[in-house]
Length: 151
Image 1 (cartoon, rainbow, N blue to C red):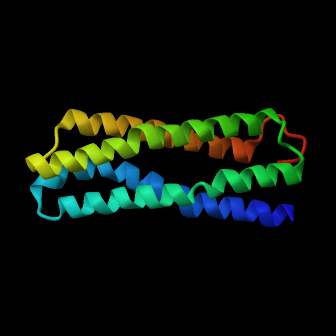
Image 2 (cartoon, rainbow, N blue to C red):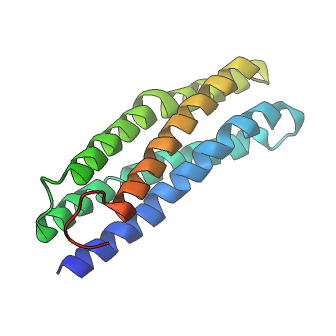
């Protein structure tokens, strides 16, 4: 059962978190270019929708992760506790900063036909923090410092 849970956890992370990471990273530069061509707003709406939909699906990642950790008997290990905290932080950054800023830029583009560079830079910073948190969680999942379950 542990191998099945771990496989589902990894697949959920790839399928759900991967698209959010890529779409969120593509959004700021696409927003800067949006006024230059007629398809910019459509591209931004698509990227934002990918972020929203796949972040909802991404709830499966920590749920399966906790189930896997329980099956492996490692829920109290420091590397897993740290990963859970970082995952919570990444979700908070996404919900509190990335998605709302994307909404704001879409509104700004609709109202003015373009966006201010400082707004896209701020979104890029929050997106970078989100991506860095997920990268750190991924490394912790692979390395598992201090783990006695093997590497």
